[in-house]
Length: 295
Image (cartoon, rainbow, N blue to C red):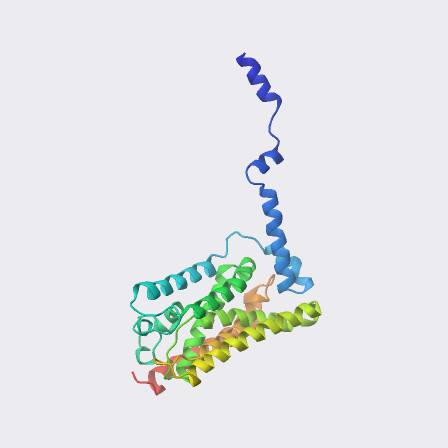
């Protein structure tokens, strides 16, 4: 009886495709991922670059940088919204102004604030807008360019935002990751603008109009909050939005258009790097010796 059972079991082996279906159908999941990547390529790239994108697009490694940054920003927001005694959910609260992360001109000698301000946000609408935009753009970009390149562009926008604000709006504070978000938007916008004729006309127009609408609304609100509103509290600068966008349209564009080229051999890369370093040292000298803001 035991031998018959063994023979019966060997007579009906489980086929590989059935086994895959039992384990959750990984082939179907793989096709879904490929479809997502194809849709991303149609949205982001002209036709001659889509094949290169699809060859490089994969989830190994996954888009770790943009996800970790988003989680860190959300965690800091929840900390100040829940554990600090303030109404931080909707409006600017006094707690974030006392944070060691917020950039304030009188504390500019604490150099980490030129980067750490990206973790502090002024209300739900502020952080939700930044998180949605950076995840929407950052994940597909990181699937192709990986975390190092996307991280470099993002952090270049954050630093450019605080340094430019310290020069052109020296008495204002800074909170939020808008500099990094606008660096991603700037790189994406330049890619859409330069490749406009090679994209489907309606898609190209739609992409540019969406970017202009989002940027115009956000910058307009930032300018309103800076110059028109009379809410109590420290005025927040809007310069980081513009400076982050400029960083994205230069450094970000160079990074995001080199799909299958050696980046170090691209003269545009070195022009952007030299220009960024020169602007960085000028901003440092300005803040040490020339800034009108109190020390």
